[in-house]
Each structure stands twice: as C-alpha cells, then as structure tokens.
Length: 283
Image (tube, rainbow, N blue to C red; front, side, top):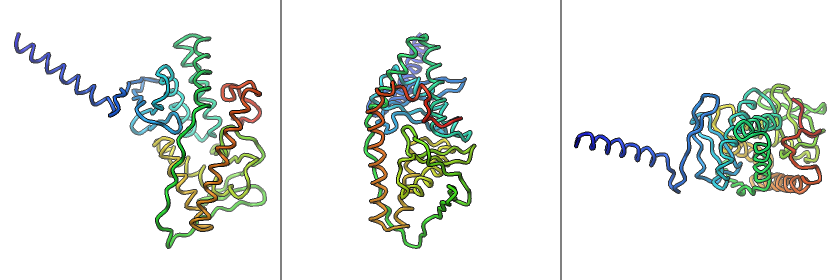
C-alpha cells in the first residue's frame, strides 16, 4: 500500500511538473488544441501586435493576452487556414477571407448557426478596434560596403525584384493593407492612394514577408524581417536619416488609413471581412 501511495504521489508530482511547464511566467496557461487531427498549442501569455500569430514550426498559435478565451480556438483556426492559403500563393486578402469563412464554420459547428455568427462578429469588432503596439524601428548599425537591392518598376506597371518579374497593380483600393502579393498570379497590389515613393519599398516588403511566412515562422518574425529589409533599402538608396524618415512616413500613412477604414465601417454595414465587396481582390 505504501509503495502504491508513493507511486501515486510520483505520478501526481509528474503531472504537476508537466502543468508547470505549460504555464508561462505570468501564470497564463497554455492550452492544447486539435484541428484536422493535428495537435497545436494555444499560447495567450503575451501581447501580440497582430492579435493572432502562428509558428508552424513549433505548432504554437499565439493569441493576444487580452483576447477573451471564447475566441481562442476560432483565432487558432483562422491562423492555421490563413497560412495554408498564403503558402499556396494566394494574396493576403483572399487568404484572410478564406480563413474567416473557415473560422465562421468552426464556430457554427460548435455553437450553432446564430451563436457562431454572433461570436465571429463580436471577435471581428474586437480585432478592428485593437490598438496594436507601436512598431519598434531598429537602427541599422552599419551600411558600409552594401548596395541597395535593385527594384525596377517599368512603365507597363511591372516590378522586378531578385530577378523575378511581377505585375504591379495600383488601380485598386485594398482593405486593411497597403500592399499585397498574389503569387499564383505573379502580381503585387499596392493601394491606389499610396504615393509612388513607397512603391519600391512595398514591393520588397511583400516579397520578403512571403518568403519568411512560407518557412512557417509566423507573422511577427516575417514582419520584423520584411520591415528590416525595406528600411535597409530606403537607407541605402537615400541616406540613413532620410531612409528612416521615409519608412516612418509609410508607417504613419498606414496607421491613418487603417483608422479611417475602421471609422467608415458603419457606413458600409460593417463586416468587411465576412462579406466580400468590390474592394476584395478576386480569387
């Protein structure tokens, strides 16, 4: 009996250790999530600038620590499905819409048609009103012996970067994005209201962003690396200070456009992401 009690205690101790390993420093538990027969971990212990993120390599979905728990699994579904579409070469907007529909289907299968739809609408309102942390811009220590990467933009609206040609479409109004890359159509979209001085930088950003995303390292890593490449381009082409100034102007423009977009949502019946409109890029 004593040996059995000791074994039980040892088992309990092991369980406690496993639980402790699964608890980040701030005490928020990580939770397991199975989707399409694959096991993932949902980590809600941190502030996430993109509200949700997914590291495919570690199978960890990151959800902002302020997100209500009822949205965690839906956000996880969204991040998994969105990355799958991006890796197939679809545009971010198409991938986002596709993931949103999959998320809606998940909620409705779990909670019912009406309650599932309500959950997605509530989550969307929360995400659209979310104020992401200010982007940290790291100064590049040295640009000596470096030359800016070549980005050629031809009169027929083509961009060439890293030896690859892309169609450049600047005729459309994008939603919640300054630019987008549609690999299957070899097209880079830049919002029609974006000044031309930002076009080369945005081409670099989209290509570099997609390369990192396809490695499965998540949006935060991909955005950081793409921003670094874009900033480096501006600084090599102009100067350290002028390049930083242009990059900051682009970031400010993005914030202004997003704020205006959210402000105008009620006039457009809201739910831009759920219901595709003319601004949405075609599949």
